[in-house]
Length: 172
Image (cartoon, rainbow, N blue to C red; front, side, top):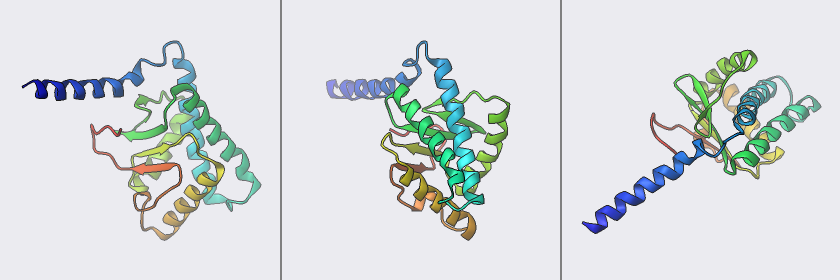
């Protein structure tokens, strides 16, 4: 009986730790909101640009830098890997709703289509992500779009994890 109580207590503590993300931004919600919008916009812009330009083109330099800056800023704020998740037509960054403005709203409509095409609903970025990791990610993305087969779930991406989670499922 005592063992069952301890296991239940451990499960509750685990859930509480996972939900702690909602209380760790006291006084910094506006910074988070802007960074999460930036992440969403910069991800879309980079994916769109990858379809238009060669990945070595200097036109992508600013897009690479902007996305890496968004990830880094969010990591500095959250102190955990950064995950952007699509759930019921909305994007969430580390389980917090991305509060969209007009330009973000426009970009999220297309980003939703990209996530659906790739059959993923979450991308997680480790803090040590580099430009070369994003380049591999984009190379894979372009290949999948052009060949219209495979998806990110079949491919090991450095410092990026693509997932297809079920509704209500929380990834550790």
